[in-house]
Structures are given as C-alpha cells and as structure tokens.
Length: 224
Image (cartoon, one colour):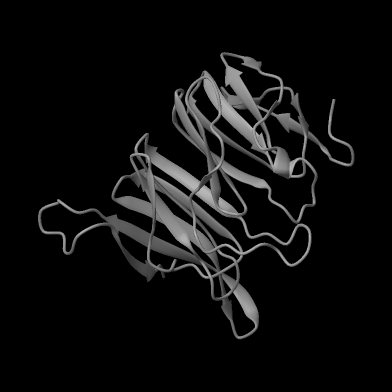
C-alpha cells in the first residue's frame, strides 16, 4: 500500500546493456539509492521509507523516519543515502539528521549537519546529500540559500562541522572517492542568474605527511 497523496516509486536495474522491468517500491515524491555491491542496495523515499535489495529481491517498505511520512512537510524529509558496504549505510534528512543501517536495523536519528533552519513553508527544504568513501568516513552537506551551505564530515561515529561549504546554492551533491577527496557540485548565483559550477573539494586529514594544520580542513576552487 502506498501513502495517500504520494506518487508510486519504481526501481530498475541496468545490466548487460539493457534495463530490467520496473519493480514497484512504494510511495514518495523523490527517491535515492546506493549499492554496496551487485547484490545489495538500499533505496529511500522522501516519505521516510527504506527498501533493501538482497540478491534480486526488494524488501517491503520499512518506515525508518515517521516525521517524514506526509509530504510536502514542514517537519522533515529523507533526501539521500550512501552505503559503504552491506553492513553500513547512512540516510540523511533535509534538516541534517542521519540514520544508520547496521546490516539489520536502522538507528534513531542523530544530528549530523548543523546550521539548518526549519523551512518557511511545507516542502521548502534544501537538499542534503551524503557520500561515504569508507564505513568510517564521509562528507554530508546542503545548500540552503545563496549564502548558506553547511556541511559536516563523519570520522568513525563522530560528526563534525566543516568550514562554510564552497557551493552556496540550493542544489548540493557530493561524491567521495577516498577519505581525503570529495567532489561537490551545485549552482552558484551570478547576476540574478544561476549557472552550474563544479567545485573541487579536497579534505585534508591530520596526520598525513606534508599536510598543514590539525583536524580536517577544506581546500576548494572553481573548476574551469
């Protein structure tokens, strides 16, 4: 059964040069998916449901975040998910909370990305993105407006705010290849018009030879 007033979601697999038939998941307006292998994926909907693929079979919906069940919402929504391996995934919400999958169950919400204010009206959320390079390190962030782009890293089980994010826009996406390199993409305002900009975001971790300063810092610059 879907949630009243929500669209139907589907999952499709691309393999061997062709797409599978759509597999019905459940209800929601937006979806995100992350695969740790060709036999394990997790999909989430903005309405707080999670679906697990094991082998070729998707699980029924698991309600991992009831505050997001009704969309559009002035409370919260689930935005993104990233899996480092089948025993570790993290989903993030529009208000900067994180929910962790341990291979069997989902955790309760944990504050992750600071500085996100409640929306002015239902559905007025920025998009929070997350990417795990390993099961112990990731970058999450969002662009709330032209002047707010909070982000945070997770090292082990601890979330820490990073310096003000370099991509100051309502669309913020990130992908981490290693624990020292992530790429963020978003839009920057320019003379009342918005253009796509790619930002190189390099995370510098303490303890590496030749790297300045303690802790984790950000080095960034607009790509041509």
